[in-house]
Image (cartoon, rainbow, N blue to C red; front, side):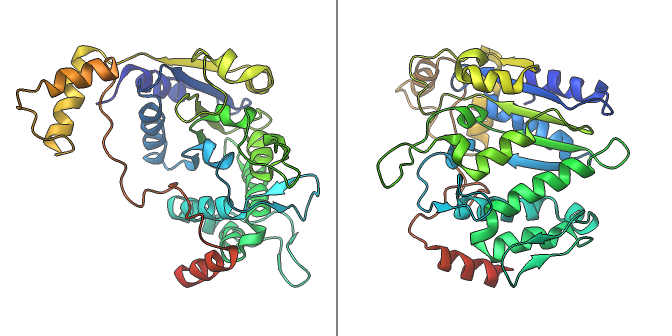
Length: 319
């Protein structure tokens, strides 16, 4: 089922002038109204047309429950999140393998005294560096963003930046320093580089992002509208942008989605006299019931019990 907000976004992408600075589209709406699914429809549309896709499935995973924080070797004022960065790079390599083999680095990158990536090497080698050497993964993500922005032009390829929960970039975090003071989002290397990617100082693609209150830190009591969830700093950073509102499901949409879940056996025993369907409608206030998360879905949570050394060993074996 493709809903009206998805069709609206696709219509914008079809007529956009990709020689102009990138347009930012911000999807917003009430909890459970279908913002993430709308974003997924846009990602699918672009994937079927061979766009290069940089997808952040949940930006809030980058600002909370981080088990490893390391001082940045590039900028001592920032903090690296090597496990999150390495996981994201692994998913990127799966979805963009052809482009990573075709595109080349435009400069030389030095990671350690013994390791570097020379100019003119495939971007895939850059990604492999961050996966095999987890400690440098955050800086690899920044270098990759820089390369893709510089090389994305109307006559080369289309680039989609898709971020679910973009308001995480300007909200509080759950991370603390040794002195118990809060780590700000701007101090995280991943967030710093993602903010730069969302700027409209490049052409040849699109930025599509959602605002969320589900699992969002500091969003209690806020309305779902952009000016509140983005806060002033985030609103100013993304302005100008095109807002796309996702309304709650209509009765017809609810029925369609409900029957789909029954058909796929994500919901069972729908004929029981307990009024389960009515209870779902009342509880969800029309948005559809969410199916259980698929095990091993890309972008899922990281096993916080693993050390950097263990992750590097696993990545090397997989690679």
